[in-house]
Length: 507
Image 1 (cartoon, rainbow, N blue to C red):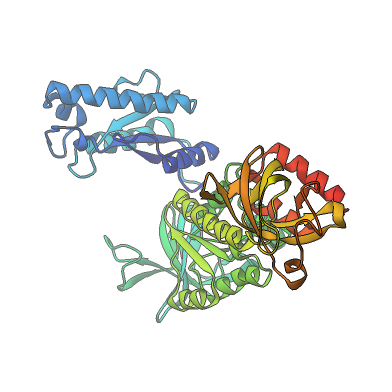
Image 2 (tube, rainbow, N blue to C red):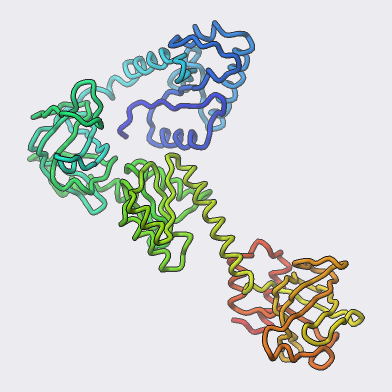
């Protein structure tokens, strides 16, 4: 990975939150050494700010109850790390820095503890990472950002960690369309004490030696992926081998795309963040399929790719999950016009929450639209003493023998050649209207005809109390119940569904 040493920020007031755990897992996966900034100590009740002071000096100036609260909250954080299989201790009480994580209490607002954090950042590389941080001549370079700059064209910001870059070098970089081989036209850096992203006059260089950030100007950089490695082609190198090497990481990411083409579109700022998002979406607890991926701002092409789901009648997948990237104004307008949803967030879990809420909304809409056609299984017995109206609408008292009777359920008489007599219009129990009635319930039921042939059915002529009534199911209604109401039916209800399926000879 690009990172040699990381700082994991933990809120002392909230402990390990979901995004903190995600960051922790990424650091462990990449075996990146890190220290923990136990931040927001100034939020402890009655904390007395000492400014940019070492934390032990700040703590010595606090009242006893503040120190007690700090100890309690710190112990909870340590316990949370223990639950993740990690040991942790205050950096100045750390018995073994190699097996215990170092906690540095800090306040980003007041500056308390920041000298300790800086001191630890300087000390650790010198004492434990000296060999790793030694300069080597072999090129080690990572693409940070690709952007269009007026007057310069498409440029590429990179971090040159090791080795030397020269003007005119042939470089190999990766894109989603394949490897890109191009020549360095210019190497520039910002003015001293200026940030790379701030506009201004650049300093041109013939050669650049690591480690530092540099802007590269070259042709064919439009589709280069941020977060991928950059290689320099030397006379001893084989260009095909470098192409294979530069695309190896992308192949691993592409393998996580659903080959069926069903799923959401995923967009991220760099290959690393895209990889993290795909890993999260693939996890068993989330399990969201992905159809296409891209890196960089969401544009009209990405909206078009997501809109394919609408053509397949899969509205729930007409979605772009944009992690740490912006959406262009034209793309947003197109998304609104086409009905494509774009969710943006800087935290993976926020994206998941937005998409989950959207999926719940879609399912509820689908459930409502399917309510009429989704027929629940039920078996009814007419109570002969409770026949109130013998013609349309037929009003009778019934006992629910099996299943669940619901308003809107079509009713038929199997013993009379499966004639349909209408659908349940309303039900009452003790003069109170109910929407559904389960097994063992006695209800007064109004059965309303839905066509001319049903309106001619009469109780006593076409059927009577000796005939059993059942819900009129079909292949379509069974599929809709399975899709939208599976959890609403009990095991006995499904057993009745199987019986009725056989009775109606449904394949």
